[in-house]
Image (cartoon, rainbow, N blue to C red; front, side):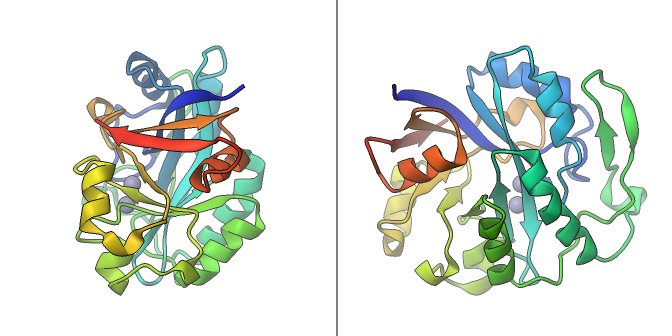
Length: 248
Ligand SMILES: [Zn+2]
Ligand SMILES: [Zn+2]
Protein backbone atom coordinates (compact mmCIF):
# COMPACT_ATOMS: atom_id res chain seq x y z
CA UNK A 1 0.00 0.00 0.00
CA UNK A 2 1.21 3.48 -0.82
CA UNK A 3 1.72 6.02 1.94
CA UNK A 4 3.28 9.42 2.34
CA UNK A 5 6.83 9.52 3.73
CA UNK A 6 8.13 12.78 5.16
CA UNK A 7 11.71 12.88 3.93
CA UNK A 8 14.73 15.09 4.53
CA UNK A 9 17.25 13.60 2.13
CA UNK A 10 20.32 15.76 2.83
CA UNK A 11 21.67 15.87 6.38
CA UNK A 12 25.31 16.24 7.43
CA UNK A 13 26.92 14.82 10.56
CA UNK A 14 29.83 16.03 12.71
CA UNK A 15 32.11 14.23 10.24
CA UNK A 16 31.66 17.05 7.74
CA UNK A 17 34.18 19.75 8.73
CA UNK A 18 31.41 22.34 8.35
CA UNK A 19 28.94 20.20 10.33
CA UNK A 20 28.32 21.14 13.96
CA UNK A 21 29.87 18.86 16.60
CA UNK A 22 26.37 18.38 18.02
CA UNK A 23 25.46 16.50 14.82
CA UNK A 24 26.34 13.09 16.24
CA UNK A 25 24.26 10.03 15.27
CA UNK A 26 21.97 9.76 18.29
CA UNK A 27 21.22 13.51 18.28
CA UNK A 28 20.37 13.45 14.57
CA UNK A 29 17.98 10.51 15.02
CA UNK A 30 16.33 12.14 18.04
CA UNK A 31 15.84 15.49 16.27
CA UNK A 32 14.52 13.79 13.12
CA UNK A 33 11.90 11.88 15.11
CA UNK A 34 10.92 15.05 16.99
CA UNK A 35 10.35 16.74 13.63
CA UNK A 36 8.06 13.89 12.57
CA UNK A 37 10.34 12.70 9.79
CA UNK A 38 9.98 9.16 8.43
CA UNK A 39 13.15 9.06 6.38
CA UNK A 40 16.47 10.91 6.29
CA UNK A 41 19.57 10.60 4.12
CA UNK A 42 23.00 11.07 5.65
CA UNK A 43 25.16 12.98 3.17
CA UNK A 44 28.54 14.06 4.48
CA UNK A 45 31.05 15.72 2.18
CA UNK A 46 32.99 13.03 0.30
CA UNK A 47 32.60 10.35 2.99
CA UNK A 48 30.08 7.89 4.40
CA UNK A 49 31.96 6.83 7.52
CA UNK A 50 29.29 7.96 9.99
CA UNK A 51 26.39 6.35 8.11
CA UNK A 52 26.64 2.96 9.84
CA UNK A 53 26.50 4.66 13.26
CA UNK A 54 23.42 6.68 12.34
CA UNK A 55 21.81 3.44 11.11
CA UNK A 56 22.60 1.79 14.45
CA UNK A 57 21.29 4.79 16.39
CA UNK A 58 17.99 4.50 14.48
CA UNK A 59 17.69 0.70 14.77
CA UNK A 60 15.00 0.63 17.49
CA UNK A 61 13.05 3.53 15.97
CA UNK A 62 10.70 3.92 12.99
CA UNK A 63 13.17 6.30 11.29
CA UNK A 64 14.53 5.04 7.95
CA UNK A 65 18.12 5.98 7.12
CA UNK A 66 19.22 6.31 3.50
CA UNK A 67 23.02 5.93 3.15
CA UNK A 68 24.43 8.82 1.13
CA UNK A 69 27.32 11.11 0.33
CA UNK A 70 27.65 14.63 -1.01
CA UNK A 71 30.44 14.28 -3.57
CA UNK A 72 32.40 17.24 -4.94
CA UNK A 73 33.26 16.94 -8.65
CA UNK A 74 36.31 18.48 -10.33
CA UNK A 75 33.98 21.25 -11.55
CA UNK A 76 33.22 21.98 -7.85
CA UNK A 77 29.66 20.73 -8.25
CA UNK A 78 28.03 18.98 -5.29
CA UNK A 79 26.27 15.74 -6.22
CA UNK A 80 24.15 13.71 -3.80
CA UNK A 81 24.64 9.96 -4.05
CA UNK A 82 21.85 7.98 -2.34
CA UNK A 83 21.77 4.21 -1.88
CA UNK A 84 19.63 1.48 -0.32
CA UNK A 85 22.61 -0.21 1.32
CA UNK A 86 25.80 1.15 2.77
CA UNK A 87 27.68 -1.82 1.22
CA UNK A 88 26.87 -0.49 -2.25
CA UNK A 89 28.09 2.98 -1.30
CA UNK A 90 31.47 1.86 0.09
CA UNK A 91 33.10 1.35 -3.35
CA UNK A 92 31.98 4.88 -4.28
CA UNK A 93 33.56 6.20 -1.08
CA UNK A 94 36.80 4.36 -1.92
CA UNK A 95 36.79 5.85 -5.42
CA UNK A 96 36.24 9.33 -3.96
CA UNK A 97 39.08 8.88 -1.42
CA UNK A 98 41.46 7.86 -4.24
CA UNK A 99 40.63 11.06 -6.10
CA UNK A 100 40.50 13.46 -3.17
CA UNK A 101 43.86 15.07 -2.36
CA UNK A 102 45.13 16.50 0.92
CA UNK A 103 44.93 16.09 4.68
CA UNK A 104 42.58 18.00 6.93
CA UNK A 105 43.80 20.98 8.92
CA UNK A 106 41.37 21.15 11.86
CA UNK A 107 42.31 24.73 12.72
CA UNK A 108 41.45 25.94 9.22
CA UNK A 109 38.61 23.70 8.09
CA UNK A 110 37.11 22.19 11.24
CA UNK A 111 37.01 18.85 12.94
CA UNK A 112 36.03 15.61 11.12
CA UNK A 113 34.74 13.39 13.91
CA UNK A 114 33.64 9.78 13.49
CA UNK A 115 31.15 9.24 16.32
CA UNK A 116 29.34 6.00 17.12
CA UNK A 117 25.74 5.32 18.17
CA UNK A 118 26.70 5.70 21.86
CA UNK A 119 28.06 9.23 21.39
CA UNK A 120 31.67 7.99 21.62
CA UNK A 121 34.35 9.42 19.32
CA UNK A 122 35.80 6.61 17.23
CA UNK A 123 38.41 8.82 15.62
CA UNK A 124 39.09 11.79 13.39
CA UNK A 125 39.26 11.39 9.63
CA UNK A 126 42.54 12.64 8.16
CA UNK A 127 41.43 12.96 4.54
CA UNK A 128 40.62 16.56 3.57
CA UNK A 129 36.88 16.27 2.99
CA UNK A 130 36.21 19.90 2.13
CA UNK A 131 38.21 19.76 -1.14
CA UNK A 132 37.17 18.65 -4.63
CA UNK A 133 37.83 15.32 -6.24
CA UNK A 134 39.55 15.32 -9.64
CA UNK A 135 36.62 13.37 -11.11
CA UNK A 136 34.33 14.94 -13.71
CA UNK A 137 30.62 15.20 -13.00
CA UNK A 138 29.66 12.69 -15.69
CA UNK A 139 32.03 10.04 -14.29
CA UNK A 140 30.64 10.46 -10.78
CA UNK A 141 27.01 10.25 -11.92
CA UNK A 142 27.88 7.17 -14.00
CA UNK A 143 29.64 5.49 -11.09
CA UNK A 144 26.65 6.14 -8.79
CA UNK A 145 24.22 4.63 -11.30
CA UNK A 146 26.45 1.64 -12.01
CA UNK A 147 26.59 0.92 -8.27
CA UNK A 148 22.78 1.04 -8.05
CA UNK A 149 22.34 4.44 -6.46
CA UNK A 150 20.62 7.62 -7.49
CA UNK A 151 22.33 10.91 -8.29
CA UNK A 152 20.82 14.27 -7.45
CA UNK A 153 22.08 17.74 -8.37
CA UNK A 154 22.52 19.39 -4.96
CA UNK A 155 21.05 22.82 -4.02
CA UNK A 156 20.70 24.11 -7.58
CA UNK A 157 19.56 27.51 -6.26
CA UNK A 158 22.82 28.18 -4.39
CA UNK A 159 25.44 30.60 -5.71
CA UNK A 160 28.27 28.13 -5.20
CA UNK A 161 28.89 24.41 -5.61
CA UNK A 162 25.75 23.89 -7.68
CA UNK A 163 25.49 22.68 -11.26
CA UNK A 164 23.99 26.00 -12.31
CA UNK A 165 26.57 28.16 -10.47
CA UNK A 166 29.50 26.12 -11.82
CA UNK A 167 28.35 25.09 -15.31
CA UNK A 168 25.55 27.56 -16.01
CA UNK A 169 22.88 25.03 -16.88
CA UNK A 170 21.39 21.60 -16.24
CA UNK A 171 20.70 19.26 -19.12
CA UNK A 172 19.05 15.86 -19.44
CA UNK A 173 22.45 14.53 -20.61
CA UNK A 174 23.77 14.93 -17.07
CA UNK A 175 21.47 12.01 -16.14
CA UNK A 176 20.39 13.31 -12.75
CA UNK A 177 17.52 11.37 -11.20
CA UNK A 178 16.28 14.60 -9.63
CA UNK A 179 17.43 18.05 -8.62
CA UNK A 180 17.47 19.37 -5.08
CA UNK A 181 16.51 22.87 -3.96
CA UNK A 182 17.51 24.39 -0.65
CA UNK A 183 15.18 25.23 2.21
CA UNK A 184 15.10 28.90 1.09
CA UNK A 185 12.67 28.15 -1.74
CA UNK A 186 9.43 26.26 -2.14
CA UNK A 187 9.23 23.79 -5.01
CA UNK A 188 6.54 26.03 -6.53
CA UNK A 189 8.91 29.05 -6.42
CA UNK A 190 11.74 26.96 -7.85
CA UNK A 191 9.49 25.83 -10.71
CA UNK A 192 8.84 29.50 -11.54
CA UNK A 193 12.55 30.41 -11.22
CA UNK A 194 13.76 27.54 -13.38
CA UNK A 195 11.21 27.12 -16.18
CA UNK A 196 13.80 25.18 -18.23
CA UNK A 197 13.64 22.38 -15.69
CA UNK A 198 10.08 21.49 -16.58
CA UNK A 199 9.69 17.74 -16.23
CA UNK A 200 12.81 17.42 -14.06
CA UNK A 201 11.90 15.89 -10.67
CA UNK A 202 12.57 18.30 -7.83
CA UNK A 203 12.92 17.72 -4.10
CA UNK A 204 13.54 20.03 -1.17
CA UNK A 205 15.85 19.21 1.72
CA UNK A 206 17.37 20.97 4.72
CA UNK A 207 21.09 20.37 3.95
CA UNK A 208 21.28 20.53 7.76
CA UNK A 209 24.67 21.24 9.35
CA UNK A 210 23.10 22.05 12.74
CA UNK A 211 20.51 20.17 14.78
CA UNK A 212 18.00 23.01 14.60
CA UNK A 213 18.11 22.85 10.78
CA UNK A 214 16.96 19.22 10.55
CA UNK A 215 13.55 19.08 8.89
CA UNK A 216 13.76 22.67 7.69
CA UNK A 217 13.36 21.40 4.16
CA UNK A 218 11.02 18.44 3.74
CA UNK A 219 9.66 16.59 0.76
CA UNK A 220 6.64 14.37 1.09
CA UNK A 221 6.90 11.36 -1.18
CA UNK A 222 4.09 8.89 -1.87
CA UNK A 223 5.65 5.43 -2.16
CA UNK A 224 5.21 1.85 -0.98
CA UNK A 225 8.44 2.00 1.01
CA UNK A 226 11.36 4.46 1.19
CA UNK A 227 13.75 2.74 -1.23
CA UNK A 228 15.76 3.99 -4.19
CA UNK A 229 13.60 2.05 -6.64
CA UNK A 230 10.40 3.49 -5.14
CA UNK A 231 11.81 7.04 -5.07
CA UNK A 232 12.81 6.72 -8.73
CA UNK A 233 9.26 5.64 -9.54
CA UNK A 234 7.92 8.65 -7.63
CA UNK A 235 10.28 10.94 -9.59
CA UNK A 236 8.86 9.47 -12.80
CA UNK A 237 5.25 9.50 -11.53
CA UNK A 238 5.08 5.76 -12.18
CA UNK A 239 2.47 3.33 -10.77
CA UNK A 240 0.84 5.97 -8.58
CA UNK A 241 4.08 6.99 -6.86
CA UNK A 242 4.45 10.75 -6.54
CA UNK A 243 6.59 13.55 -5.13
CA UNK A 244 4.25 15.86 -3.28
CA UNK A 245 5.20 19.48 -2.65
CA UNK A 246 8.12 20.22 -0.38
CA UNK A 247 7.52 22.63 2.45
CA UNK A 248 9.20 24.10 5.51
ZN1 LIG B 1 26.62 21.21 -0.86
ZN1 LIG C 1 25.36 19.50 2.06
